[in-house]
Amino acid sequence: MKFRVLETLIASSILLSISSLSSAQSNQQDSTILPTGTYYSQGTMFNNSRREIAHKNNRICIKIVKGPANPYKGVEDITISSVSFQKGKFYIDATGEGLILEKNGKVINSGRGGVWEYRGISPDPRSQPIQAQKMAECVAAQGRYVQKMQGISISGIDFPKY
Image (cartoon, rainbow, N blue to C red; front, side):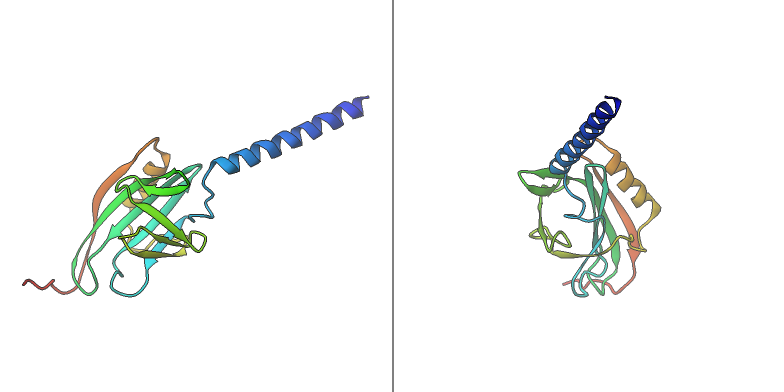
């Protein structure tokens, strides 16, 4: 009798675990669909720009770094934003732009902002500690999060004035 009760208890626990795991998986955006890490543009024109994705629990944030076009000098413009998942699509809260995912999220396209290819989990070496701090704040925050800042100064040639 004791064995039967223990057996039933174990079976119930396993079924409850499986049930809660499957419902949690269906309710959250899978990080393999939009992997954490750094995304770079193809080609050399946008060498000074990138996108970085961070996850924590069911929260996704993006860092959009817009540097000067190669070979010009300038300062990085950085936007750190929460990412919303609505009606089966990801949206950048700061801009309202949708993210078009290709190749299982290894390539993201915002339509007008170019195509960004996943290159790995390591942050870009040009990232500053304050940027990592703001990304951590974003993934820990509740609701919409938008933070704008300037990054490093990029050396190069002056942009021609016409």
